[in-house]
Image 1 (cartoon, rainbow, N blue to C red):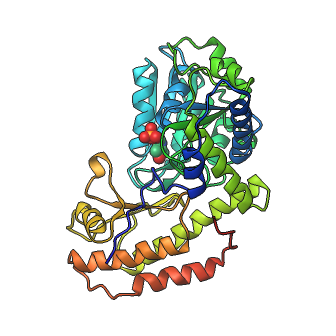
Image 2: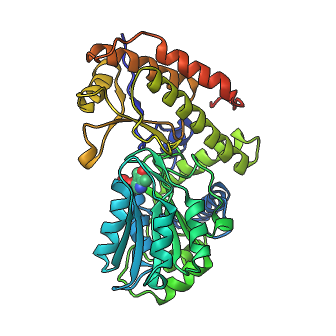
Image 3: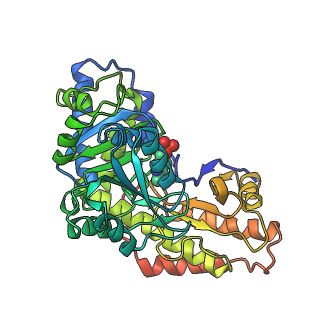
Amino acid sequence: MLRKLRLFTPGPTPLLPAAARAMAAADVHHRTADFRALYAKTLLALQTFIGTKHDVLMLAASGSGAMEASVSNLTSPGDKVLVLSAGKFGERWRDIAKAFGCAVEMVNAPYGETWKMADVGAKLGGAGGKDIRCVYLQATESSTGVRHDVEAVAKVLRETGSDALLVVDAITGLGTTRLDVDAWGIDVVIGGSQKAVMVPPGLAYLAVSERAWQRAAAAKSPRYYFDLARERKAAAKGESAFTPATALIAGLAAALDYIREAGNGDLAAGRNALIANAETAAAMTRAAAEALGLKLYAKQSPAPALTAIAPPEGMDSGVIVKAFRDEFAAVVANGQGEMKGQMFRIAHLGYYDYLDTIAIIGALEHVLAKVGAPRHIEFGAGLRAAQEAYAKAAPRLLGAAR
Ligand SMILES: *Cc1c(COP(=O)(O)O)cnc(C)c1O
């Protein structure tokens, strides 16, 4: 049979056709009135998409660029910071903070789990807790498929009287989980283009609170390309400090239009619909995996952004990843770092619909049968569980894309 190449990876995600068309037509110069209008409109739309009144900026970088900017602009060498880590992206916060000379305190949770709030409270409220200047965490840890409770962390900050800035990597959290950025007191929230907003990699975006701006003005870590104050000044005029990723911004504008249409003209409602979409696809996938006798890697607090599934006992997950690719040209993600071989990850964030989800589950049944899963694979068992999960969710149906 034909095999269509399909991405089921938690970044890059499938490209929205309308975004692809907008990018192909983006033959523009960035210091023009037309582009300034597009830039300003996109920043405004991102504000609504994120759900914040804070300043929003875009950077020509992958998501990690905005993570680095959130360290270099908010800290001085020697500053004590707290990193909440439970996977490879949490470890990235730790490594960036160390690179900029921060004194890094950690709260760790095992891979596949989330932190105990008592541990977070003990760090912030304990001896030396008042010296912590920033708290860095993920909303969803894409390397394990775990959703962290950002609201609970924000509450611990308030209860301990900490004045640390709260910095959230929501690169796979935005558009998949509810984040009440301003009400919870999130100072910096970061997104990336290749995740729920359905455009290719290369554009990071972030919202920055007034408190964070005050800190940035006094922070002494070195910075040049990722100078947020300079970007803020440029953004106020519909510009960026350096040459922006014009085509990606045109694509992002089209994607945000698409999300607004999904909300019948209300972008925040469209964002909520996108979240519900990911939740439904994730519920279908979890139900299918369990019906097929597979274990979920993130049991306690699974993220709607992606589902991490352990291979059958004794099998390297690379065998499954390869079979998906060879047999169906479907790209699913292996585990990262030490977790390689221990899971395969199927994404739900962004442009996935019912048929995509059912297809990858149907393919999973064939893949398991082919690689010789120890347990007999009854065709249809996973599909049935997924269909039941879909029927139970009874999702509101959104307009078809052109
Ligand atoms: C994708 C991702 C990043 C950023 O990775 P880049 O490759 O720099 O775009 C950071 N954090 C999380 C949770 C991610 O999923």
